[in-house]
Length: 333
Image (tube, rainbow, N blue to C red; front, side, top):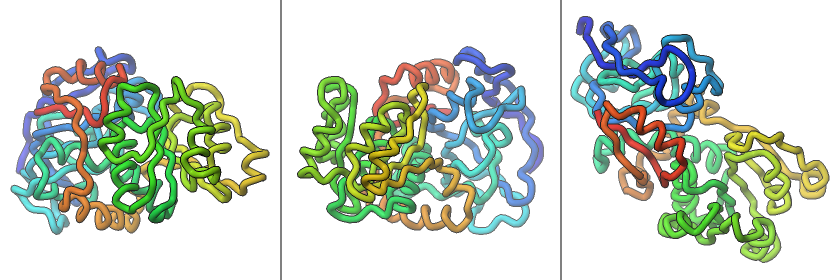
């Protein structure tokens, strides 16, 4: 149970991928309500790039750890932990401070409520590549959006891991999916994942194509990580009493409030992050109960774009920032 030396990724200043260093860190035994995991795979998220850059919801205290999602074997449990034992295959959920508990390392200590058993059908790599994006998509489509069979959902920037998770969840409900992608490169993959219609925003008119696809009615639900001026188009592409869920700010330009369209249609436009779900014990357990059976039946299956070695963590971050990936980037420890 005692102290343990662990190679851990930390950064001593904010900046580009080169600030990431692998260092020997002394880890204690897990505290009350904590679990220590021997990490085998890490799933990367855009949040970690933002955190490393000093542009995230949480401000890093330097030197800082980072990382939300790891999969591995439980090697020690603290007092008061129930339902998780040494030897279990588990993955971590984004329900903690990344600076405090960051999981980029050979070992990770995390709060017990931020741990879930890996579905039997999944490998360690798949186990490290599920919770962030599927809970994010679940919170928007199911918890807030109450998406129903045959409704239309418009998913922008759909080739991200969250976009793909949203397509799969929407299809499991029986909804109709309109996905956007900039060009042809990723369009075919989106169709393979179940998108009914793919709009290529480089060459097609977003509003006209959504209205055509929905026989003029518009989309009941819009799930968008871009923000900025596109919100005007999303409002025009929405149905009466539609809901637009903004879960990111990829566009650095100001985001207008489309007042007249919102008045005419009675639109709900809401900001949302995954932490609304993961930091509420009831919502988090509802999310797990909803998703686990779908994982076990392989109705939801993460797409892993590329795997890197732990020693190449800088390269893995640079690759994420190149925006080439479709799905999840995994680092093997």
